[in-house]
Image 1 (cartoon, rainbow, N blue to C red):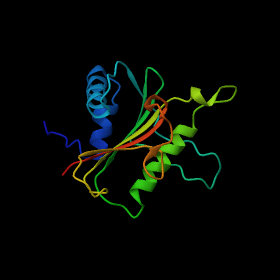
Image 2 (image 1 turned 30 degrees about the vertical axis):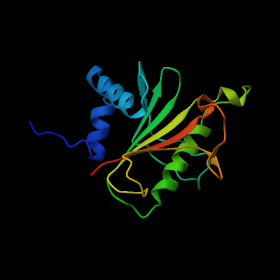
Image 3 (image 1 turned 180 degrees about the horizontal axis):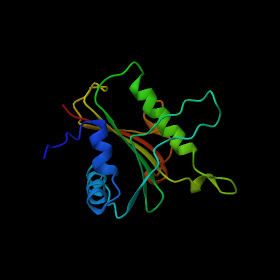
Image 4 (image 1 turned 90 degrees about the vertical axis):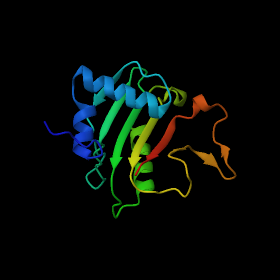
Length: 161
């Protein structure tokens, strides 16, 4: 039996996106490690983002996961640089995912957390960190919200060689 390279996009989706206990356990372990939070239950959702109108881009997420508290996580495996600007692309994915929540008749504080977790083999940030987390901040590094629990949009990158 040949072993699969999980850095391959298709192998990544196959191993972590399969509808079986082993894949679900592996996915929960991966999310627990890289999101630094306990993951009790996850559900892999359809990864196609629905367009609002015909000229809008229709991104296909690598793996879209929903936690039991309805937190949405997009896991992306990005092995090479493309012509698209990757930080802007993943910010777009994050905004689309966050904005896709049904909020009619609800308060904005009821929005659930959304996270885009990206695994890269390219250096996009000039620092020595393996893991970087990006949040909305004001100029001067002031956070937009005072309580980290209110910070509902996160882009986290994991760089590897």
